[in-house]
Image (cartoon, rainbow, N blue to C red; front, side, top):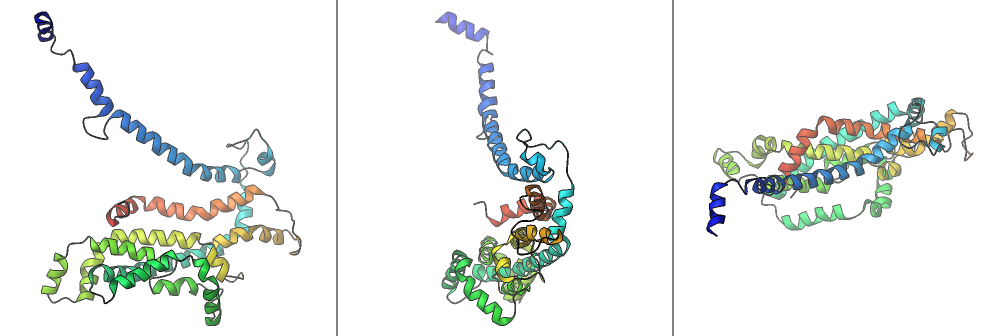
Length: 323
């Protein structure tokens, strides 16, 4: 026993290598070890592959011709890149007109929802409104009720108002803090304003500012992260909306990209001279052209998110959506 103690005193570094390896693998704090970081990296990589695979499939298929599409030896990378599919897709989608109409509708509706939902969210969070809890429950109910159950009443109402085939069914509800996912945006602003300290409002009251002035001069400028999140969500959801445009836009006077994707084949058949009554045409079963159209539809929101990614992530953290 005395000999063992002498050996340990002679080699004070005996357990140093084991402790260092343990610290490297497990980390000194929770979450900073090599094993944990490797597991997180593998998990995030798996999620990235799961989400990026459909996008890469669309891009790869859009650059093939029908022969390469039917060739079992070609999976992801075409032998030759066929860019003519995008020309056909642009013609079939009526892309220029559809992008203009969809972009204006999505941008204006998103801006209106930011203004109206911010005001409603502030009222629910900070003002003493009579029956506030009941009204907030009604707002949540409008979010839970599927829009398909309201399709017939809304169609009849908008038809009597003469709003069909116009952007008004998307813009007017946004003015009143409704429209596509309007209730969710009210909840986001309510959550954000509820986290701000009450001392700012009390100081504004001592200076003689009313509720609207306090909201406009103090609270709203602080809500820029929530405004960005709501604008991006609203823009993308209006851009991708299919059910509402298919219901309210019945002719080609006002176009939405999501519905044009479904009409692309018939539009191409008309351009090819195929009679409208026939079920088949020159462009039937041309999957590469359809994938090219899908890439063109999702490209603008992807570019918008790439430009605003940093601020969007910061806004998500500050609005409490990750809690």
